[in-house]
Length: 211
Length: 211
DNA sequence: ACCTGAACACCGTTCAAGT
DNA sequence: ACCTGAACACCGTTCAAGT
Image (cartoon, chains in turn blue, green, yellow, purple):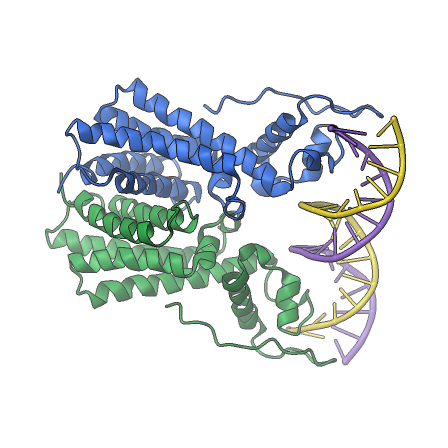
């Protein structure tokens, strides 16, 4: 779904040789790989550098600090999420089914890339919310939902509430469901998680339709 | 709302003297104070110890590690949250207004104690989900919502879905709204945040009522 | 029983120095 | 321009030793 990054194997550092590739790109990919495989709290600059056969301070040539690297990874996440949402919407033909597919796609993304998803919304990001690229990527993903809801309203299928407000509500629901499933708040991770997803998208539909 | 802990001032350590109070309690209170004032990532065992005039390893007599301390703080949070929920429900007389008040109380708790709330649901807690006290406290808070929804169903006011599923859905919505507001995803923190809260509780009502 | 202080193995970040 | 290695100021945790 996320278009997994090219598998650049950790390589032994040959002495006296620079990286001389797209180190910035390589750093982001390696950070994402670490996050997905071992979790966000296992991400260390030393580890990333070592895996790339590069000094642990090399990344300061490309990022101002660790947070900036994490923000870049989060940005990638929002771009992948946006794609997942628009894909679902398009594939189901922009109708009620499309909207439900979008909701399920959102939750699936969060569950399938739980560590990455956490980074996208975690406290990490909050403080470096100045990162323009990150903000734009997040906005674009959100806009995909707004557009879909507007189309449904114009087709006369849903309540004509403020689309932005309506979108925030829908986003809240799927975000909340995703977080609950991720946090393992649901004892039996599989069965009740699946039931909640289905119930949630159905009730969203009711909420944006009925009086 | 949370019944703020007794203000035990950081005191200078007098040499050769032990704490000899309820150190466990003092550690939890101090940790919570640090979290609320400076955020969860500013919490260090060294800092807690210093504020209490105690060695930085003293807490290992009362907690197995930092995570256990954090779990205890999270447990306190769930107990306070449960109180906030039942208070709102009771004060509004168990009706539709009571349920809406509950939803707003939930979101208000999260916003007013944002750092504490984050700790309650953050990744911290996930790994030490074995902490029985924490699990019980979280369950009790959730149960308050389940009970309210069951009562509404029995009064014939809402859909007779599986109460547990319905409660998870409602919890997801308020949790999602709280997270969105907290993450500053909402540009104008005040106005649109307020609007979203109102819209959310209203749409929850619609979702659990209509077909 | 309860607490301490030194020690250990980690962090992110800075900076003068290399090529 | 890009990268390195040593150094700095932090962590959580362990453990022998004190009272």
